[in-house]
Amino acid sequence: MSDGSLDSAVMEEEMVYVRSASEGKVKVDFVGVKAVSKPDRQPLAEAVCSIMESGVSTDWKNKLVAITTDEASVMTRVNNGVVTKLRADRPNVLGIHCMAHKLELAFSDGIRKNVMARKFEDLLSGFYTLYHKSGVNRASLKQHFRELHMKALMPTRVGGTRWLPHLFKALDHFLRGYAGVVRHLKEKSQEATNINAVLRAKVKGFLNIGKDGGVLRFWCLLHDTIYQLSNLSKSLQRSVSTLAEAQSCLTSTQAVIEKYKSKPGPKGLAVLDTDTYEGVLLKPTDADQHDKAKNELINSLCRCITARFSDVNSGVLQAMRLTSFQCWQKADTSSDFGDEEEPLRRPCLL
Image (cartoon, rainbow, N blue to C red; front, side, top):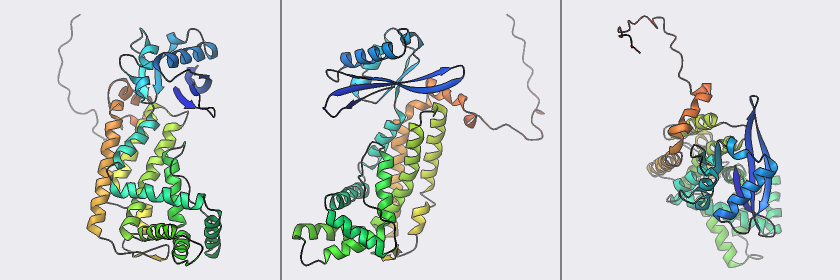
């Protein structure tokens, strides 16, 4: 497994992990990191080879089974990518796109054209900026949480190294601390002094969006959906996870998300057939419009996940399902199993 990063000196670094099996035991080891002159095919391939030869074995290419990278063109280009160069004259070596990274791309594809989802990300980013850059706002919000006897859940950054889990944490903090946040925004929007007009207008905008019943119901749907995708992302990032387990988790996650079209998740139930959330009165919402937005989101996400993970349903990756008993067909335990007469077959003469 190979990936690149930038260090504090803004120098390109290439990191290599090796997953190996010995005497039936599978383990993942960090092999090394090496600076590269530029993120191009030749320097990257040389860096990986150097790390493997010094950290694993000079004979590592003969034991190579698969190479996992992100989907950067410099890594996966068919004719002159890093993976192609490392394969050399061994075409049977698999090139695998990191599944956790695929999931992130699938989610981004799924919400790219969804106005409500983009509004949700913008609002969470705005909340984070509002409280992260102002000690006064943070202190005031914490005071409101104390008065409501709530745990102080401060807005967090939407993006991060844990991708979907970071996004879920930001949304979860907002919904769990909803009453305190709305109370503080309401107080802030009514201040006559100590606040400039631009900030007051921004706070009022946040408050209006946050109290919109349709928006909040959609965010609760997103919470349930991202919770499932976040857990899937964590499963895909586990060092002991196998391809078969990843495929099984992917299938079950899609099934759960599909179910949300007809049956709300835990957060969705909290705002079902009610005009309040956490004691805050919400603006009326159009149920038909919400159902339409819900179906559009779920259909788009499932379609994009299927498209991004299409390669796991063919070839060697699909065959890896056999390594997990969860993917095996259930045994036929019916009482008449085996009683059906089989047609007589002519012997095959060799």
